[in-house]
Each structure stands twice: as structure tokens, then as C-alpha cells.
Image (cartoon, rainbow, N blue to C red; front, side, top):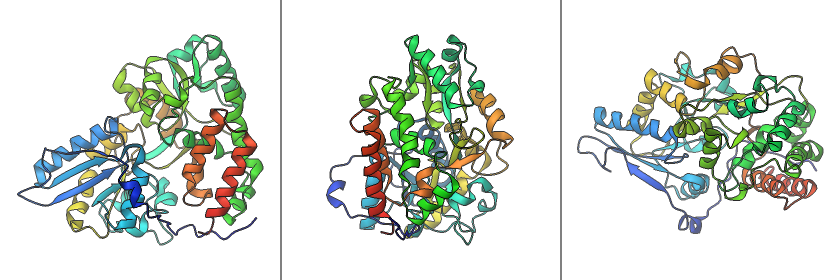
Amino acid sequence: MKLRHKKYRTAIAVACAAAMAVTATGCSRGGSTSSSDGESLEFFLNMGADSAQYQALSKIIDAYEGESGVSITATTGGDTYEDQMKVRLASGDIPDLFSTHGWSLLRYSEFLEPLTDETWAADVNPALDSAMRDADGNIFAFPGETDVAGILYNKDVLDQIGVDPASITSWEAFDSAAESLAAQGTVPIYISGKDQGSAGILADFLAADTFTEAEQTQMQEGTFVDSAYALMLDKVHGWQQNGWFNPDYSSASRDDMARALADGTTGFEIAQNAILSNAFTYNPDANLGFIPLPPTLSDEPYLVGGEGVDSFGVSKTSQNKEAALKFLDYLAQPENAAALAESTASAPGLLGIDVDYGNLTDSFTAYVVDGNVPVKPYFDRVFLPNGMWNTMVVTTDSVITGQATVDQAVDQVRTQFETLFGA
């Protein structure tokens, strides 16, 4: 079935009742919600209060408050950030500053102040242009990182089975390593089923290479390609049938994912590099890294990337717009831009920023710095209509838990695709 897709139109559902049911974790940096010397800003964040990126951003906010006299109240939305933002956008109660987490252009741009004329905008990493700039070159968020990720690993665990992570350039090699890990009682693939998103990220990373170019075009034009989506879920189903996912999947959190890598509970995770940053907070000496994903249809391994969690926009209706824009200028200072990228173990969002990758230097040098490994976009941001993320998460989760067959999951995704396309 072919449908018309208005890709750049944002559908915001009014769900005010839901706002009463969600909670947020917040603090005013510097211990005050107002300032006698200047304005107050609300900053709504899509990150955990205990995450490495929140800790890094908090230090930057503390320093800025001391220098500027502006008070910034930083609040984390946790797992319900996107639901809370939908409610706030619909009601017009929009924070002065907020995380755009990969959606500054396609979801949030109509609510954001254009930032194209800001002094730092010309230095945005060109790798982000397709994700963050519109057809006229306008940009709507400050990029604190250029998100690149693949398969995360614990090298010490892989050494136990005699596997060099750099040798994993095919899914056959990956599956062989997973089988060896399972044989020695180690969890091959650890993933969170408790926190929203991890199952969807797994699907996003795999689906990036299960569609031919022609099939990708079909998706963008409104025709859902069942076989290509099933090819992705077949791999997930195979891992589930082999018992390669962690037994505590349903109760495991993203924090548990970080701990599992840090303490060697698992060999692999297919997730964003921010997990690595958090893992190092538990075990600074952990021997961790990342490798590209093996190809399914392509000829070579690939990374997935684009606009990351540490991307922030300014509400175009903010009463404190100038103060918010000045704070973004502060984030763009080299030491602050570097700290943001380091906190998520990502490449910087701006050119000319020197980043200390620490224990991940080998991985970045091998796969990112020279730009020789292709970086594919997040599948859902390019080939699925707005509003598909939850369906992607739920259906992948149902395959991981064995509650649905691949065909049932594909049917559910197709139905939602056809419902939302053109909405």
C-alpha cells in the first residue's frame, strides 16, 4: 500500500492526563531557582540524573552560573522524556532549553529558534548536516556530539575465548564469538528491557543494513517492505532462540547495561557509546571498546550515527531567549564542547575540538578519526514516519521475550507505518 508522507510535519498529540502521571528528576544548579543578578532558565534534559553526560553538563552549568549570574534549573525527564515533551509542546509550556536527541529538524524545528547565524554554527561537523540542517541550511540545535556507535565489547572477556574484536567483520564471526561466550557461561549480548529504547536501538542499528537502496526509497515513498524488516527481526529472533540475551532482560536497566560491561558480565552490547562512558564510572580500568557492525547487505562493516543526546535547542517562544542563546555560546567554547563529547564517548559536534578519548582512543583511531568506516543514519529517523519509535521498541521487545513471532511483529510495524504515513 502506497501513502503520501509529510516527513517534516510534526504530529503532537495532546495527552494532558499523562502529564499528571509522569515524574521528573530535577535540580537547580547552584542551589537556586532564581538569580538576583539575571534571568532564570529552565533546561529540560533527555538523560539520566546519574549519567556521565549529566555530570559533565552539571559542571558546565555550575561554572556558567558563577560567571554570568544566570540561574539554570536543569531537569531530567528520564525514560518518559519524549512523552513529557509531547505534552509540553501541545500545551505551549515549552522549556527555554531542551534536548533534541536526534530530532531537532524532523520533530522539533517548528518550535525552535533557528541558530544558523550563531557564531559556532559554521563549525558544526559536516557529518551532521543531513540530520540537522534543512534544505536551506538552517540548523536548530547546538550539537554537543557527533554520535557514532556500533557493537560495544569487553576485551578481557573476549580474550578469555581467544577472540580479537577487530576480527569480527561478519555476522558469522559475531555469532561464533557469542556461541563461545555462552558455552563458558558468559552472557553474549546484554540489553535493557526495563528502560524505553534499548530494544529500538538494537533494531535501528540492524535495520540500517537490511534494506536495499530501492527498498529504502520504497519506504520513504510510503510502501512498507515486510521482507527487509523481517530480515532484521530474524537476526534478533535467532539470538533469542539461542539464549544469547541476558536472562534478566525484562528487569535490566541501561545502568545495568553499563555495569555488565564494566564488570565483565557480558561480552557484547549493541548500543550507543554513552553506555561506555557510564561503564567507566563503575570501573575506570575496564578494558572496553567498540567495533563497527558487520554488514548484512553491504560489502563492509558500518557504524550508525548522527545527532546525539547532547544536542540542545532554544524555544522560539522563550521569554529568556537571549540568555538561552548565550548559554549555547558558552557550551561551544572548546573546553566545554570537548567535555560534552567526552561524556558520551562521541566525536565532537564542532570542528576543531580536541577530545581526549581515554581508554577508547584505540577504537576511535581505528574506526572514526580517519573517516574510513561508513556511518549510516538511524533507520527510524530517515525511513519511518514520526511516531513509529514506540512501535519499533515494543515489537522488537516482543521478539526478544518470545511473546511474538517475527511475522506478528512485522505485521504490527506495517500497520502502524501505514497509519502514520502522511498523518
